[in-house]
Image (cartoon, rainbow, N blue to C red; front, top):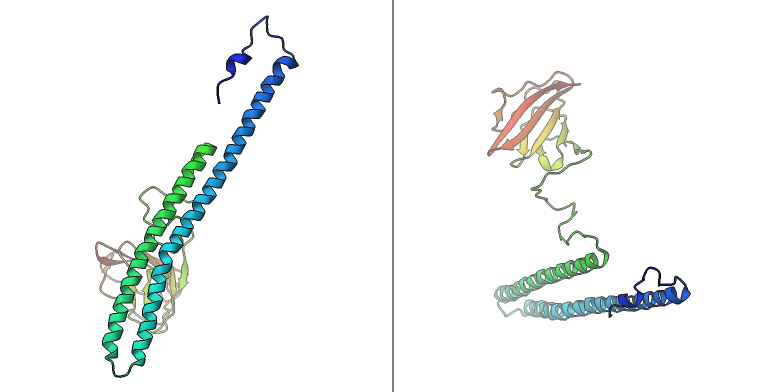
Amino acid sequence: MTMRYPAYVMKDGKTRLSEGYFNPIWREIDTRLDTLEGLRVSWQAAVSELQAFGLARINDALEPQYAALADLVAQADQLVAQIPVDVAAALAAALASANDILAQTGDLLALVDEARAAQIDAMTALLAAETGVSLQPYDAETAKLDQDQDWTGRQKFAELAETVYTVSDGVGVTIRASDGTIQIWAPGAARSPTIDIDEGQSVTLMVEAAGVGSIVWPTMSWVGGAQPDLAVSGHTVIVLWRALGTLYGCHAGDAA
């Protein structure tokens, strides 16, 4: 639209502030807003059409791959039914071809994920441009609770709750860091536990072992040089961790 500013310039002592002056201005503003709203509707329709087109292209690419895989499975069923044929060799060939198809499908799905991420990033940029608000880019691993997260920046938490786990006692008992960072263990007899702790992990172990006697620990390095004696009552608190490729243990003290 062309600029209309010169038509509405006011001059001190000359411009009369009346409906004849203001009404054309309001009409001009209303006309321009109506035009912009029409453009917004057209933009939203274009985005919806682009999304529908992208999904259709994805379906066109995936369907032939799955159809080919179904044909290979049908061929494998036929080969198994043929007794005189070398079934093992025929199945191996069919499975090899099926694995190739699956690998190609996996690559295609990865490309689909990349295209979807690019589409979301583009939409994020458009929305940021329209609203003036900066939005977080798409990240496939964001906030996935079942994924390992590598944080390189400083993290600040209002509070942190550790998992408390009660160890299931038995002859082949194992202390696993993946079960929880605080573990309670009441051995029913003398035990030789396995310690499953990876590099950088630690476990606070509370051993309730009144009358059990000593525990045969695996090869490890104890702070102070010797493994602790178990408390007669209450809990013997032991901190276990692995660093520099070595499993360490430290007797933190006894507790009720």
